[in-house]
Structures are given as structure tokens and as C-alpha cells.
Amino acid sequence: MSADSVPLKPLGKEDIRKLESALLTISFFSQETLQAIGNPHERLTWVDSLYVAAAAFARDKAGMTASQIADEIGVTEATVRKHLKGETKAGQIIKQSYEKLKSEGFSVAVPGCEQSQQVKNLEDQVKSLQETINKVKDLLNQALKALS
Image (cartoon, rainbow, N blue to C red; front, side):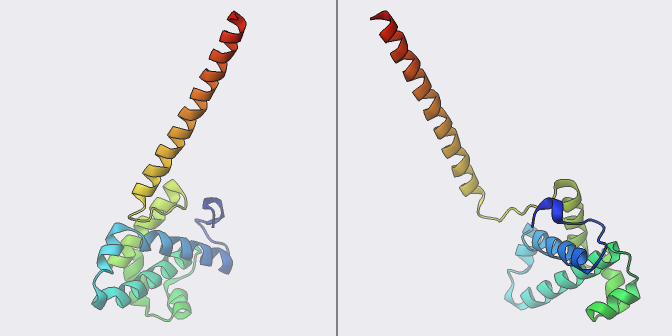
């Protein structure tokens, strides 16, 4: 799913699904969520809460009422309202994820992969330097031929 294909104001069920999926993905890989689900006793409730908050938030952005959202996702209106107001931790994380999506687009940094990205950057730099060295060698060889 590309950043351009995630609608911030969904117009239909497919758009709602896209926004919901993006919010869940961004939220799931946030440092805060990873710490919270590190506890095996809370893991299931956290995943469930994040889903309900993302589902409620995406539907709210599509213009659905709390009552319609509650009926569609199978929770109470009170639960929907709490998530939408950010009164729950899951609701707060989903709101933060929406703001991140709005400002940065759809991207997820997977914890632990930063070193891999650093290695990739270094490899790119080495490749660029090797290309520069080869160009300089070619120029030196051409200069030597011209002098001979």
C-alpha cells in the first residue's frame, strides 16, 4: 500500500479498510505498542483494542456516527466514543498514527532494522566512492596516454 493510496477522508468501504489497515500497521510498530504487547497477558487485549480504535477512527473520518460505528464493528457506543476522544491508550496511539500518516505519509520503521538501513547507506556510499575512483583512474590513464 503506497502513501498515496491511503485516503485520509475515506469515501467508501474500501477506503475505510485502507485507512484502518494503515493506522493499524503504523500503530502496531510504534515503540509504545511494542512495549505494551511485550507482556503476554496483555497482548490479546492490546491487539483487540488497537483494532477497535483503528476501525472506529477510520469510520469516523468517513463521516459515520458513533452509533453506526458501534453497530458495524460490534462494540458499544461508549467504547467508540472513548477511543475517538483519546480516552483510551489505544485511541491515543491511533490518533498519533493518523497525525503521522497525515504529515509523513504511510511508512513504518520496524524496530531493530535501523542498523540494516545504516549498513545499506554505507554500502551506497562505498559504491559511489568506487565509481568516483574508477572515473579518476580513467582520467589519469587518458592523461598518461596523452603525455606519451
